Length: 367
Image 1 (cartoon, rainbow, N blue to C red):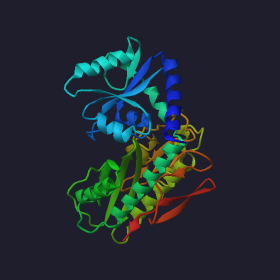
Image 2 (cartoon, rainbow, N blue to C red):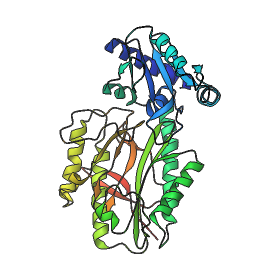
Image 3 (tube, rainbow, N blue to C red):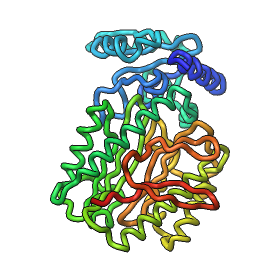
Image 4 (cartoon, one colour):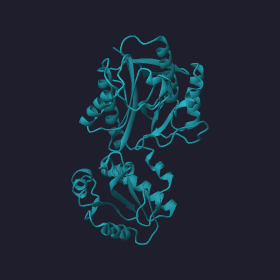
């Protein structure tokens, strides 16, 4: 599948969506949506902003990008060159020209947008469903991203030293990722007792004495890969080992049951049973357990009773946790066993059994 084939398939999904909603077209400015429709293109300038600096318009008869004269040259030369998408350019200081372009595209007909723009209505949340199933080319991009996010995290975690600060570990992780054009979207680091108290540990100046938990979200082409690893300096305590083996058994249950057609809530139920069997029945209540991913960190967080069903070609990231430890990787739903998109390379693993099936999960790295 070429990029143009990928684009054509997405435009077919959009055409069906426009018909179902009675719309003339949609405007896509959010970074995740822009990357999706442009097959991996980037409209961002401010990394921390959800909205990008250019807008894609997908209508019944036209696909184009609206950008000011600052962004247009890069978009034409780097992001859209292989797709043949027109860029409608306006002076950065002349918002009225942008408004005229938008009005001309809509031509007085009904339109929707993912951010406030012109007189367009708000794009409904069900638009996200168009992005759930990934194409062959998207999956190849995801595999590259997942492999390299894993390599980056392994490199940083295996080089952790006593008295190294959490912020230094975070900085090294960001540095190694950016060298590969991977943008860090999540960097969480907890040393020693902070792993017991916080499920979302923003890095601090605290220094590592015995062990560290590092959670990483890496973004490229709009796709997000999520994973977590733990490193221990010296022999781990029996209690920490027990917790880590328990959380890995939960993760194995969640991953192995993430099959096409499975109801998300039923899969979560298998994980909750694993928590119970490992004698940590209430830990799941202290942090969400994950859910479908792709162009968002999580499209939704799975809760008990969730009737939405997983689809072949859909990415999922579970992240069960027990105070002090966590297990997380990004997977691809399909076939009899989901594919791990963030595989271990030299990292130690242990095999876990669940209902007659087996899956390797990352151990703690011990140095």
